[in-house]
Length: 447
Image (cartoon, rainbow, N blue to C red):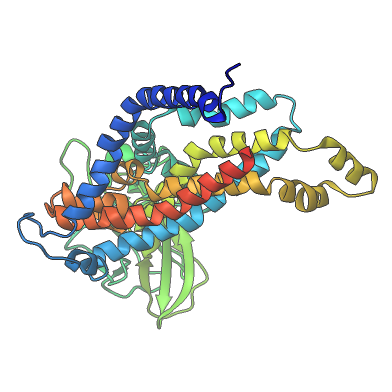
């Protein structure tokens, strides 16, 4: 009887395995071709292009890489990227952890998670436009500054006459600080009273309670008084005489006025609805009447969110709005898998919720938190859309990160693709360690 040798028996199995391997390679081939065309080739081309000058004709070796650390704009982009990597992932991981724990204790947890996750459905382009409008410095357009101005004005009275100025050639002269004072000294009891005329206030900007100033200008002061009127020296419809209180001219109510003697404020008053004021109980002597600069202070315009100092934190804020839901959902999934008996045992032993959170929940969620953090680090290293859309042109360089700097150097006016390729290789080198770490974490969790 013939007996098959082990080599003969193994041959069909090896052929079957080889056939399956060939079929697997055949199915993976389209994906491998796409991966090579869209990833491998661009990386190799960029690595080679980074060794040539802007024109691509002259080999310069490592000069482009040396220029990376000599160019102030690129160094600023590296600094901003470092801020992004340090701040954004840590804030997002912390926010996601806190929200994931809190949503377990609310009744409408699913709806709450849905609302927080909705920004992930918005493209970075649309989110950037939304936040660019929200950060507008004009309170009439930017919602954040509208809120800031509303809160500020609720606690700090704003000037009612920011555009007012004294009529030239009359009894007032301007001080360097923006105040106005009388050109001649006044004494208590002098008649007639002072007439301090101002212009530059639009009729529709006048307070609704303002009344005619003519009667106030004719009032006679007592022996220890200095009286006067502050009025809008403008007659609606034309006519009138400059420097004279005409019947149709109204007083400027609510304006602060001071009587100054030897550099000190001897008395102060606030104008009435007809613009009249009076300093009573003054000692004999000469005084200067001053209208302080606070009457003409420009209104509070809010915060310059997109100025050089705040543009990077402002863009990070927009990024947090988009990605907080992502962080919360991933950490929430890990939280749902925690052994509940461990948490209940801790409660029975007398631990409060804060102790359970710090000493049980966070340590058990360590692997999940690490994966979320590293994933966000990779993501923020590549951030481009938000920075490019939100940052205005004048502060684009102050907000630039490595990705935007690479684009600006290569295509946004710099036309130096050699230096741009060097920046892209630097960005790749910075991303690779985080990617390798994440892949290893996934492999460990899957084994």
